[in-house]
Image (cartoon, rainbow, N blue to C red; front, side, top):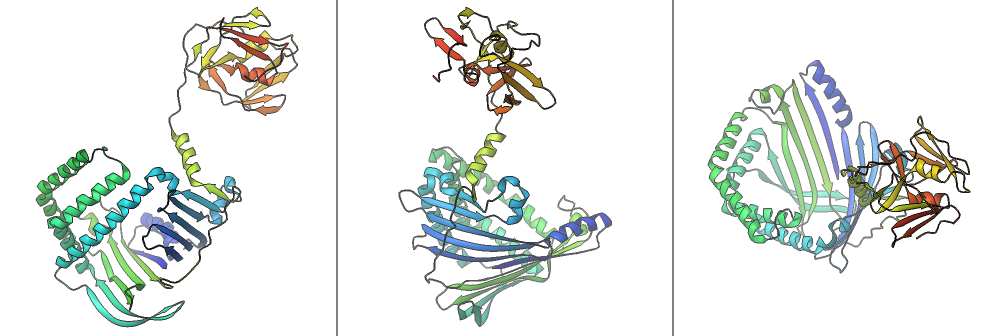
Length: 489
């Protein structure tokens, strides 16, 4: 399949010309080429597909690929999509170095809903087929827009195929007439409105966006459709009035809209092609008195596409890429991380610690807090309380580099304000984001800032400097023993 776009403009003012030049440089003559092969079972519940793509845009060419492996018929439904990342994208982000594929586990996203989704999708497709078969029997816009193009030889990679061709050709007038007729006809068709109700019900079940009670769901739909029926005459009058206003404003270019479908003797569409020529006259659209458009000039956009289908019902193989942690990234993990990053920061509470604290057997009063079930002590108070022992350590602060330095086997240097008692009130701690170094080596320790002071988890400091930490539940006493080794509880 190939898809291309061509843009042109005339009568632009200087400002709009500059904007169009930038857009045109990117999109003009842009082309998307795709080659797809697919294996699917009769029930359409299991499928493998491979798509090779090349996108040419803005003078640059990008190669991509997509693989799909789906099986919704087993006890453990599978729906995996693998995307080959363009080298241009991975080169822009250092974290993507060496990554070739992005893996999307859609089955994991849907979790236990795959069976329901499959069932609903099959039911919806059947309803669409029944609706269209009945609706198209009465569909008559009053003019012929499909013509028989006769027999044609279609060249495909597997050879020449004889096919019957059908063509759709529309100009500006016929497009507007078709739109007007379709909207009015569907609005007045009971079958169409019944299908709309079925479709909305499907979406509600699929997204679980309504109450679990089917009764309440149907009541909502019935109310919506009742309100639509009441407002329908006015809505159609407004729509037809708008169509009258744009009747003489050209929206489809001289080339019009054309589609061609070639069907082989077995009823398969073996070739599809089309061209759409659009016109946007800014001044005429602005004259409608709406906010639809503003600016100058006339823009033209031509979109062309063509597609061949071959090797129908023939054996083929699809090889899925070999994935490793080194060459792939998990889309689910990326989205999970993004969601966590976007989530509002959790607010913690720091409750003053009421426990008794013994330092080498002597009672010492600390301004300490309990946060999320753990005891946090002011870092400088801890350092000062054990200075002169074999586990002493010093603390320094590098304001320029935002670094807290912990120096082992060095007497604590008093900074002022140590051992100041707290006010006994609950506080809201803020996660400390400073870099923490012990003897020049970075440590990953949880710390909080309260009233400008850094509070560290007592057991983290105990483990860092091999200080014995104990807890006596009976007397509710915390023990800090520099003569003992730290023991993981």
